[in-house]
Image (cartoon, rainbow, N blue to C red; front, side):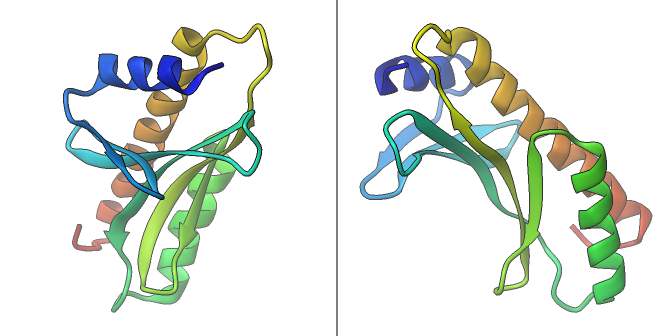
Length: 131
């Protein structure tokens, strides 16, 4: 899967796609900021929603509970609390294979991250976090 194919699929989901040197591609989908980065190997790709919600100032147990529940119930996604206090969502490194179609996997990755964001934000609101 070539980077050009991946970026073209991202453009089908977002009008706001921008290359950030040394970081990857930034785009907005459903009012959330996403990043697409090449993995360590040319055949690895990674998508994330960085800084989805701030968790500082909230009960660490409630934060951990929401993150753990998201990680248990949403496949392929990893919610992580960063040192700065933000919660980020990552799609596990995806190893592409030669005959894999970008038009199949890229929308799946974006939709999975979007679903996980909604899921986690719903957990935050249920616990009365401010988002």
